Image (cartoon, rainbow, N blue to C red; front, side):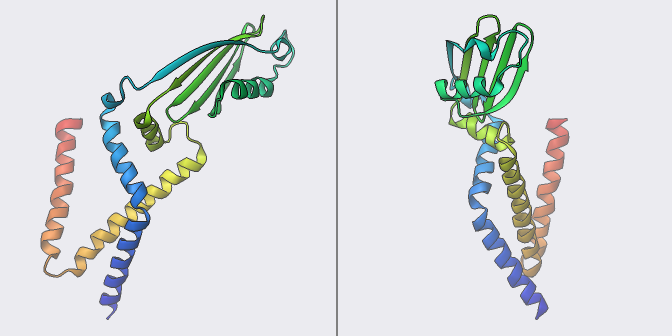
Length: 194
């Protein structure tokens, strides 16, 4: 009786975890392939360069640099949506870097004149998905989503593996295939990846 309840619970868990995590499983499987074939995204990058002029008081002399005004001006003037990744200041120049998945905007501001050069690099959909897969320039909320997706994948895998123990006629062949698959993975690692 307990064995039957555990089997039913395992099957229920596997089915509903699989369905709940279907989109993230599919996304990470597809982007696993695209990450392995980065040549598919070559030539999809668009680079735009523009010049502009900031209010001189925001960057002048030895006074405090008005970072917020500079960042908001660049965002509003050039439609930058990504978060600030870096803001560097030296005697002659300020540089502001915005990063997001498949996106980069880098501004270099001359402190003696307030003039700036902005380079915006936009990548295609595959590069954006690859960055999302890796969690590159995505923020902490997306990092949590990646972790939750990984836990769901582990639970789906383990519940599927447990189900074989409740299928008497297929248990031996199922376990043999499981261990054969794991052995092949280890062998391929030693042959090709070391």
